[in-house]
Length: 225
Image 1: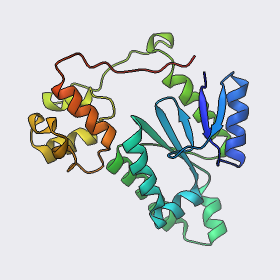
Image 2 (image 1 turned 60 degrees about the vertical axis):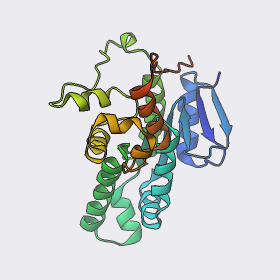
Image 3 (image 1 turned 90 degrees about the vertical axis):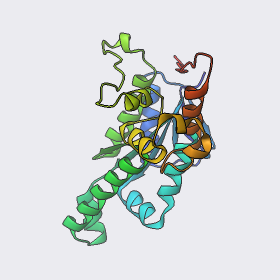
Image 4 (image 1 turned 180 degrees about the vertical axis):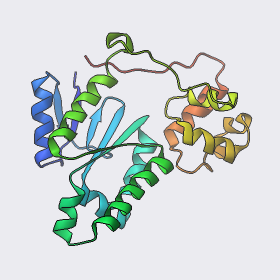
């Protein structure tokens, strides 16, 4: 069974480095067209961009559409940005302080609006290593590496604790759900969930299922190796 799926349109040094590092640790790779994202690690999707591509796609609005699509189709999704702000500034002859401020502001906006996990590495090699490490951690049981699988609970609001146990719902999204819907009962209806900013269709469906099902709702953990 395949461990890592790489979009057939993906090319360049990052892709080549990921393939080398993945093959070195014995991961099975497949190249095929992906409608959303660049790298697929089971139920997790990774979109990778250089600093230059990241800034350009933010300005054009393309990245926001990509994030919307990932949120709607995957339980977990990651944005991986690699490169050097200094080199970008040197190439474009722009102000370092303004570029850095814009760059960090965009990363913060993405994390806040999409509840997306963002990783920034200084070079291609570290970015490739992260993808391989991410696959291994996502597919290794907690007991195998000694970590305790602690759920994101124990806030001051039991309603929020309940929402945080649902896959795909982070702290920011839980706050948005409560603010928009007002109460958990209202979240049982998908029409109400559609009003929540940044909530993807798949996660909305999961929330409604968890809150209304009369049968146990199991969280599927796909393990390829």
